Length: 327
View 1: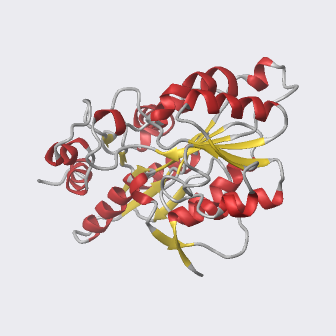
View 2: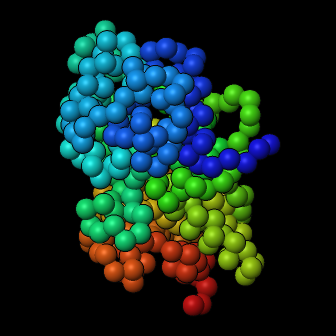
């Protein structure tokens, strides 16, 4: 199996779907002549031309609205945001139009489209460019939310997202576009709504998604050195969430730690904690613990960036707490 970069996996997903279906097109800031702000769309203008790979002004609300209108008229737009921080300006179109079209029309027409781009922090970018939005969009009925952690999942899930009849919010990360991973040359799809057990274990379940999977897997490696077997679950899809995989894992390990790059209040971990205590309370041998981003704005200083985000040492410490091990 070949090894390719995260950005190439995303590009291949879009290219394959655009070759398969002439109604699929890509639109966003710098996606055409500049080959994408992160070079995800490199070369696509040359193959598909300016009618299917469209540069836009810096007007997220405007081109998101164009995409919604196009989707209502039986095309399948892929709307790329340079960052989901900028997409706050387009939230009205996603929340009040894309997500509600099918129900408000009584099912007569839908809004088949994908909104995609990098999400979360990427180093010293300050408070306005360092926010994770999965929990915001997961709170909206009518859309699906995907947040990927590696090239293989990125390609398979983006292809599924483009084909899905509902609007899909697709979360990536600036710091992962250069990550390398094994991706088959043959076509494949990954079903939306199915989590993946990245590492099997017996002593504790660690749940995460997007780039925090590196923290979760890194913590599992460190714990293994001390004889603690951690099962690591990559959610991949945030809405709909694969409750069965999480609950069945907790029934086996009897402990749960959640690692996520969200502010703690009303986060994905809040919802997971509620659901697990509801469906698997009798299996828990310790309280559910979580590590989130700090409940404050991200600051610019590198020391504060490090304190803001979850990390491996603090995750290891939480696992030891639920294992009732001495610090």
